[in-house]
Image (cartoon, rainbow, N blue to C red; front, side, top):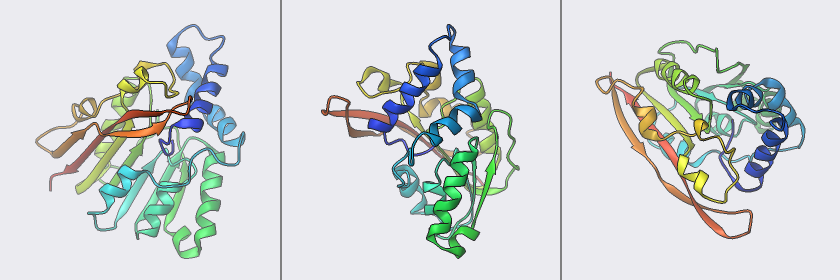
Length: 239
């Protein structure tokens, strides 16, 4: 749903989730609210920019060793990752539940020039029910997509199926250990995952899998540095 920049943006998203969830008594009710087009249209519509506008660093690192091809950016948000990929020569499909975000992303791409914008297709989808075309993409990237399980595991399997032989699957999320820090996160551990949990949804015979938990330093709400961790799954489908 966009870059995982933490800090102010994360706190605002959490505050919005909390506001919507004031009268909810069950986790299921909270997540049903948080994963709707209405929620995210309101979130994106409440400010001129939600995310930093920079591509996610794990994506940049992963793509550095890949030849451009067809890429799928899942939860494309305001389009930073998709636009960056197109600038590297990729043909990109960016999907998101929010039409407001997609409109902003398309405008961002248009500002970069016609040829770049022509390499990107934007689609509004509900990832809870959406089925991407099988074996269609050389790169499938989902950055900080946090859904309730088992919907998350089902999505990861569908995204894996969309990767061509020789292609790369990149799944990045907030690690559950972040809930022990002062960084704003929805206090819903069911939405967090580890790279190992993602890896468990893949067939080791069909994939070369790397599961990592890198740390990075961000500024907490009190202005002090905090170390948080990302769950990073990188997998290459065997030919």
